[in-house]
Length: 503
Ligand SMILES: [Cu+2]
Image (cartoon, rainbow, N blue to C red):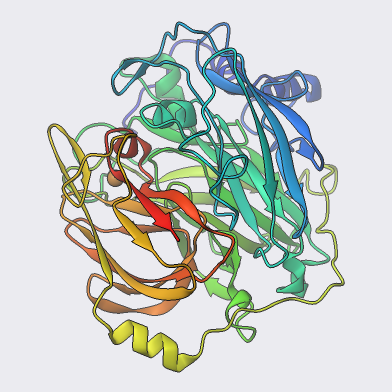
């Protein structure tokens, strides 16, 4: 054990921690009289129609937060393909921030990005360039979800260049579910559904609460790889440190997990169980291949901004199992990303806690299969465009250029085609590549064909490594100016982003 038990009472610290992360779970723990080791995973509020979302500052900590219906708990947005998201986003943050962003005190400007959705980059939809609310201002989003949007887990978060990292770290994010995934994986239809949002709790040096938190999540004292320094974060789930997730022995549940951390990787596994993966980054595995509905995996690397949706089986009676993240080697210039326990599976409260089953859909699934000849031709072609990530002491770069909001597009692409891109990492740390509004097929990593190509919207690129992608630029809805960037949001804030014009 590399931490010492603090003198402060465990219960007092735990309650303080929960209060700081989210008021509701602590309340639940107190009301139910449960011990502080084992708060039940909080269920999140949901919204199905138009709503108002406020950007606020927590009066005690000064941190940014989303406020919805009087609570600082962002709702899960649920929408059908062909439906829409209507949100009035009101910036009630202070004009004077107590937080530091990359260029000094944060200005508390803000907006919303609808990560992974195949929607227009034009205002009032998924526009992070011209839509921006300063304190006192509001934005009105009207996002039309296409009928053929892959049903799955997406998420929304703020995207003001220079301030994205701090706002996301503060928890200004929430899940989006596009309903109807059971059309691609009918086995989930009868299952109870869990939505898990991974965020961060920050650790401080020589701090009793931090010592307690490290002990609570069994933060591994063993580093992997060459990243220097002490870990600065642990994961929370729906605002709670290491919650209990109720699941009966042998019960199959459908878990939908988003990594909403600005820079912490989750290499997720469950003790002694396989994850039966149904979708990655919102994209059902079957969407491009009707014969591949699920894939059993021992662990899944979920980069910051990534999602995994998987069937989880409750352990046998008397067997304890936890959801964990393995240690991730982030490279010699990366931040430590150690192994820890994220949550515990618990048979005791499996039947008592109320949460919904997947809503069944009777409409037919639409598929988007690519001809093997087209895929082979693209894979063997010279990349049409190469994105290069690099960094030095002054900043972070795409193709040697540090992003500025006044930039023109780094490139223009004609809509209507699949295109071979390569992303090259010229640095000693990992970077997750993300492009707005588009999914891509990852077919090659570090120059080697991947065992199983996957459709993603965020992909890890190893230090000094590369990925080769087939970009799906076929969607006629996606026209206009958009961006691609590193999803370590401090890197994005410091310049690792570029504009792309879809014509
Ligand atoms: Cu990066």
